[in-house]
Length: 258
Ligand SMILES: NC(=O)c1ccc[n+]([C@@H]2O[C@H](COP(=O)([O-])OP(=O)(O)OC[C@H]3O[C@@H](n4cnc5c(N)ncnc54)[C@H](O)[C@@H]3O)[C@@H](O)[C@H]2O)c1
Image (cartoon, rainbow, N blue to C red; front, top):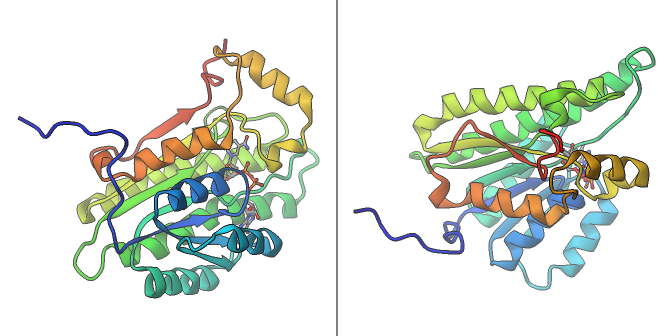
């Protein structure tokens, strides 16, 4: 007999923190808010100073450590994760949400457009995962959870998004490899691939794209950041300990089409 199931998700381990990159806006902010609402200690790494100040001001006694860091700067990521470990406890989870777009068709894409998106979306995910993994496996295999935000564009390409699609496909390969390597330390590593989510990132595209994405979805909907946050929370939970190397589409079926 196995233990009876409980609902909602099991509490996160106490004395451990969750690191959220890009946690000051959009999907990352929804993850941060959900975790703080249940009393978790959250370390946010984001490059947007104003949004971080806003987050601190609204924290109202919640356990949040908001640090201004670019995830594309590996020593800065290491320092930030180190500080989080000292002040909040060793990481139980890392959720990588920091991401940017610089859309142009391949013929117009500059070297800088290419590099900057790869630096943040792919390398930034790697730097954060590595920094967290080093603290999760010490001193004696603490275990933990990693959740990377990929995209359905990383699974099927996206017009005008060669840099972004390649970065997200790279995240999927990184996640699957990390899952193989870190399982022995009790660390699970998964990706969530959202479709269109209403955030400041997608606000720049206007209503036409949103309507086109709704038309692609069998549900006729697009996601809110909270829809992604709830899936992240499940993958962070102790009870998700047998799920690793998975790419979970949370897209209202957008990728399969209506
Ligand atoms: N919104 C969507 O439709 C959608 C769909 C699929 C995947 N995603 C992915 O979800 C993640 C979050 O996107 P969002 O829509 O919430 O965007 P957003 O722009 O609202 O939030 C992104 C956050 O990342 C931060 N950030 C950017 N560059 C950074 C850097 N170098 N260092 C640290 N922080 C940095 C920003 O300051 C911001 O707070 C991204 O990885 C994005 O690619 C979004």
